[in-house]
Image 1 (tube, one colour):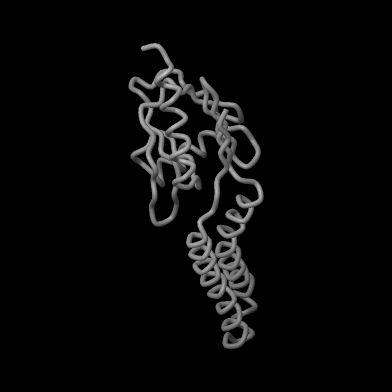
Image 2: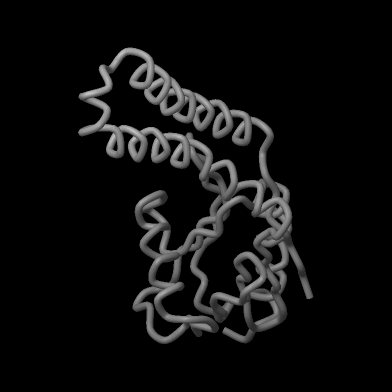
Length: 179
């Protein structure tokens, strides 16, 4: 049995932190400038929308970094045995995939993410067993298609070493399977 855990790239963390801090700084700057330079009569009318817009910028800047930090404490996992690959997202089992239905694995790296891409054999058929809420899997699958449209499934934040280990493990299993 093979067990793999996701890992975060320092460059990705730095990039997300820098981008998030910049957006949050814009929110703080917006609140600061509006508080100092807008007349009181204008703030009576537009004060609440200005505060909401400022806090929205601050929150939207820091949320991606918070998600990545949560991933560092509760990583995604892949459990692979002789017949199935199980993907666990943040501690909750998401789906199980029959290994015989995997056509190819690839390591995918883009500007915003990296991980393992899985191509399924055609016709797809019933090869995926959803282990958690269908809505959670649907959100996960649509997220994958948005980030990596060339893969049927994408397992994010697994490094190249994890990809190699999984690829070798699956190749060994497929060699032992009867044709």
